[in-house]
Image (cartoon, rainbow, N blue to C red; front, side, top):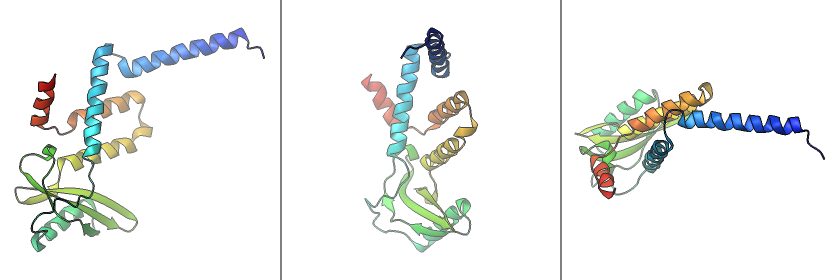
Amino acid sequence: MRIAPWLVAGLALAMAADAQNVKRRFDYRLDYQEYQRQREFKSRVFARAYELRPKRRDEPMRYINISDNEMREIQLVAAQYMPRALVNVSPVVTGCPCEEGPSCTDEVYVLASASKTTVGLQLVHIKNVWSVGTVQKWWFKHDSLVARRNQMTDEQYDAAEWELVSEFPSCLSQTLATEGKK
């Protein structure tokens, strides 16, 4: 089978144009080393984010699981995100990731269900108050961005994703430890 020279030239031109678009999309203002650094940073942030993705933990359990007053407080917080919902609360576990801050002492995972919708919430106990933690709020923003993905151009999505990456809560001790290894 013989391929027309004009077809080969057209494919080569299209591939070259596509390569330029890819370069513009991912590296339109940066030199290659800076692009690699940003990509590596973004990869580390997402790795940590997926490690901390809100989910049920069953240990280490808190000595006294949960009081009636705490349960009422948890139901009120869940009602802000899912009104008129039935709430299923996991055991309270001690300890929080450092991204939640030094005042965080405990965590609980809540499933709030209303009709056919179920929302999982990671609540943290900071200064004797139950609230949605910073990592959970970051995941709400991430999920919202992913849901809007089809309505955005690649450049808009990349910019929004980079902004989201820069908003991820970080730990000063981890940052210092990483800086010290360099």
